[in-house]
Length: 492
Ligand code: NAP
Image (cartoon, rainbow, N blue to C red; front, side):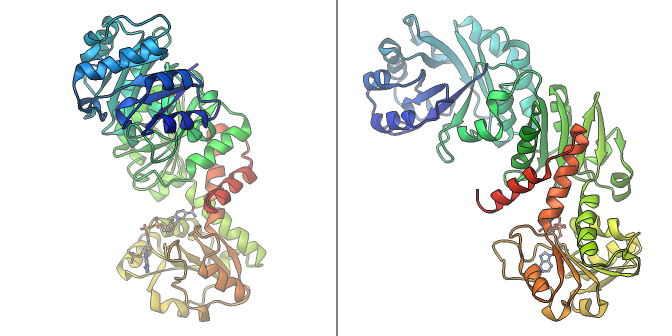
């Protein structure tokens, strides 16, 4: 099973030992980064360790901090080995400087490329093996998420038979750190906590264990993820991993920072990729890459969900149905169904407005799109056969249902609203696409006026449930997903 190694970058021996002893017992190994330490006592480190350690003294040329002489640098590794270190990590270009190691100390021979991904990882692997490695370690830098593909391929070819560590640094390389466990890598690295990374792209070990459930990942684990750029803020990994855990499914859901959806799909499809959430800015670009499209995705021209079955990509749009469900749910509570004789005012003319306008155009009696940039509202209205106006003309629409699809009111500018309180009245349905905060100023004022409200949370959860069900064919436990979102929004 792939071990989890936390790289410690503390400055002193006391700090290092204290940090080590405070780690969760599920952390198998610790990497002691001598190059990050201002001063160290190898004897105390080796006698005070509470689990196996790797001692590393990385030079600047391979992404470390050591800038002194090579002989001194490697001599520290030899000394650590003599004092009882379980592994020492020596770079391929310095391996000749390290003599015989005592029994019980494994020689990790490594190569770190801090610029990119070498073309021929296979020949690098062979050279490291030939240099007498007990454990072969190859670390690359992912400039693009597709650079992870060759690293996973290397693991897939060799990790079952040869102790091998292979991973890609950088945010784009995150999948290699987690999927290392799928291919039986010797170990994967994590940081102690956020901000204490010893290499770019490391995530805190708590996330590796509790979010990605590293100790559950194995050869058969199905891979899912969100395709976005940027992706770091996405709540989907928290939500969908919790859904998979609650359903007891052997699956992991990753954030993929993607520039080009086509090269991403090509790189990851061979590795049990089963499903994707697709968000900004790739919903349109994903469409032509699909083997089949559902009617909604084809109609609206945007794919937000991909299911991959037997090598074929099926594109869906769950945004539309999820938003319509939230809005009609509130309309039902308000006694406004059917919507055929109702006026719906959609504020905003971006992607969210487009999904909702598309979803309501055939059921609502009248749909008006109001936007700050009137030309944009007019273009969308023209395309969908609806009406358009500027923000000043909203009151004249006299809506029964009002939908905010702009980001106005979103944290941190929570005191903003585009809708004058004079427009809000008893029995009116008000839906806000914004979910942070859950109760926006618009929703608060609508409730004060006696309106019936629905928040962006419902939209978000509805579509997460729809995605989970499309991928797995199982009913999602909605309350699990909703609780995770609520706790994330509350800062948990
Ligand atoms: P978008 O394509 O960038 O559109 C943004 C819209 O907001 C535009 O119509 C823009 O008007 C308007 N706008 C922005 N700032 C404004 C301001 N200060 N005053 C007046 N109008 C302003 O974004 P989107 O993808 O449609 O997303 C919009 C919001 O919906 C975001 O907050 C997003 O988080 C939320 N959303 C929520 C969910 C969910 O699951 N709950 C799903 C999707 C989206 P102009 O055209 O004049 O610039």
